[in-house]
Length: 409
Image (tube, rainbow, N blue to C red; front, side, top):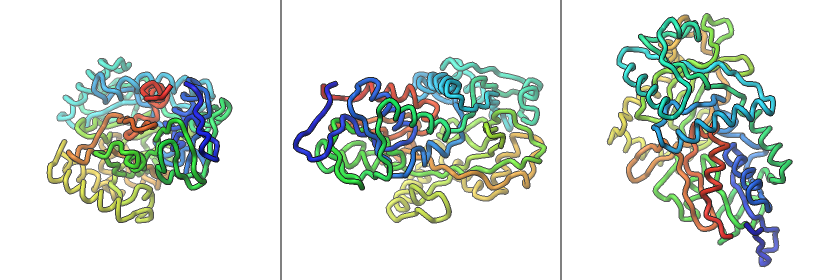
């Protein structure tokens, strides 16, 4: 690709401008630089990278257990797990490499457990069905009914340390970062408005996370989609708790919805997190209380929740009830106690900073979209849905997005 220059603009023109310094934006910027050379700029409204979903997630490297065979998520997650594990080893980023067990809370969940086993095998995941005795050898405190699933390659890392390594690596390779630089609108073809002035570009890549739909709509792309924010709140397991966790203890999820339920995760720092919840929000950055709530997002959330309730797609009402119960510590405890012996209410301590999931919804059907969504516009590529396992999948996902870009050569 030839470097793009627009001599009519007084400012320097960049070959590529990436909006958002999360793990997806940084991975794509680095891949663009490696594949096409030229000048690559990442703009980020915060004062550092990974301040939102990328730095606030659980750090679990998923394996492809949950996803339908052949889906984009399934293909990229399996490869992403392998590559991210290698990346962490190469960069000496601490990792808890003890796998994951998925347990059943009643016999009615056994068919779903076996379905996960089939999906895992179809996706090439190293997984095995185990009995209760084998489960206790892996996770002594975990409890299940009849069978459980052991997922060997699930690992846990510190996402902030991964972000620091990726940004440093991208910068060494020539990617430039401009922090405190918020996207402000599409002025005209090849020029973007920002809080630091106009920037000219050859191709723009929208990795704006919670605001990706707003950016896309300004370019006439993805108008049938809107992002709804859901907050993931965690608790910390009291160090004196009788519950001991070696790696990860997960429930069998409801395969009809995109949320995996409350689970136990041992982090590289030694602490154990319990969570998350999935609370619908009234603002895209409503991390605490009502701070960050606004009328536009509130109206959208209420409108789509009403439609989801009314149509009850994928049994949304039961999902919503479970999440509402988890708003209290007691409700949270009742979700977690079915996974491990010895858990007491007092074991749940205030957790780390919550994260917010940017969940894409089809405004026509009120469907919550579970697979990755990438769309193209004039001189632009828009990553509209990059929810979990986006962090795990980020390296092959960047390859996929860059290969799919419609560039003028």
